[in-house]
Image 1 (tube, rainbow, N blue to C red):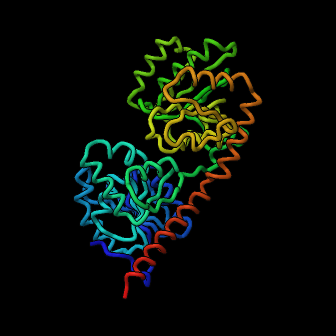
Image 2 (image 1 turned 60 degrees about the horizontal axis):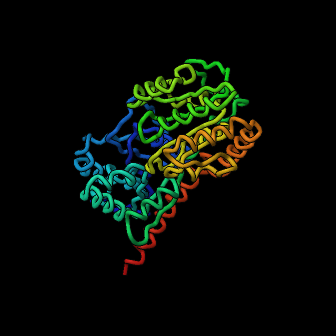
Image 3 (image 1 turned 45 degrees about the horizontal axis):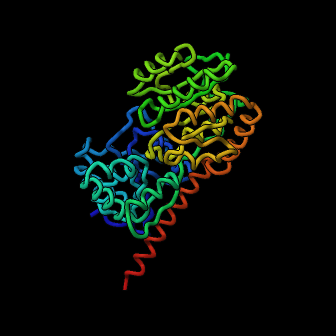
Length: 385
C-alpha cells in the first residue's frame, strides 16, 4: 500500500490531477508560491506548460479509462519515494479511483462537478464506485456549497467537507478603467449596449435559451443591442443556425474559442453578463465571478452553484432556468436602467474581492490541508496503545 506520511520527515503535497486543466495548474503554482513543495502526478500532461520552481510533474505511465486502475502501482511507488504530507486527488471519479486503490493516508479528495453530478447516475456500478471513493477519503474539498450538498446526498452519514472555491485574480479581472494586460487578437468596436457570455457552446450551458431571450429583448427594446458569445464548442454550428432563424445574424457575434488570457478583455467589452445554464452540474460559477470582478451586472439561472455566487437584487438577478421569457425580462430591467447596472457591477466586484479573491481562496485550501493532516494525526494517535 502507499503507506502514511512520517511526521518526522515532512514531505511535499502530492496532487493527483490532470495537468491539462488550467485550475490544476493554478493550484499547483499557488501552493508552490506559498512555499509548499508540490509533486503533480498526472496521466493528462500538458507539454506546453513550464512548471514553476517548487512544482515537479510526474507523468504516470498509462492513459485512458484503464489508466486510473493501471497507474496504481506507479502512484504507490511515487508515494513511497516522496513520503508526502498529504495526497490531494482531484475528481472523485477517475483520479479518485487511483487514490482510493493506492490506499495512502491522509487523502483529501477534491470534487469538481460532473464527477458527483453525472458519473454516479450513469449506472449502478458507477454509483457504487463513486460512493466508495468518497467514503475512503479522509476529507472532501468542494468548490461550492451546492456541490457539498450534492456530495451529502450521495453519501449517508457524517462527512468532513470543506468548501475551497476557485478564486479570482481581481488584478486581471477588473473593470475597463484598469489597463488591459492582454490585448485582444481581434479587436471589438463598441457601438451598442452589449449583452454577453463566456461559455463552452454545449447544451447544458443554455446558450439557446440566451439566444431566444435576446430575440425577445431586442424586439421590445428601442435601444440598439448586440449579443457577444465568447467560446467554442460542439454546439456552435447549431447555435449559429438558431441565431439565423431568429433573425439575429446582424446582432450576434460568435467569437469561437479564445485563450483564457484574453477573457478579461472580452468581458471588459460587455455591459451585462449572462449565464443561462440549465443543469445542476454547473457546480460553481467561476465565469460569473470573473464577470462580476470586471464590474458587470450579471443575470444567471437557478442552476447548480450559480445562485451561490450572485447576491440576487444586489450584484445581479437570478431567474428560472430554461425560461427565455424570464431571462428577457431580467435583461430588460438592466437594459433600461444604467444606474442599476452600475450599482450591481460595483457591488459584484466588491463581493468578489471580499469572498473570492484568489489569495484568500489559497489560504482556505492551505487551512484545509492543515485540518486534514491534524485530524488524521489525531485519529492515528488515538489508535496507538
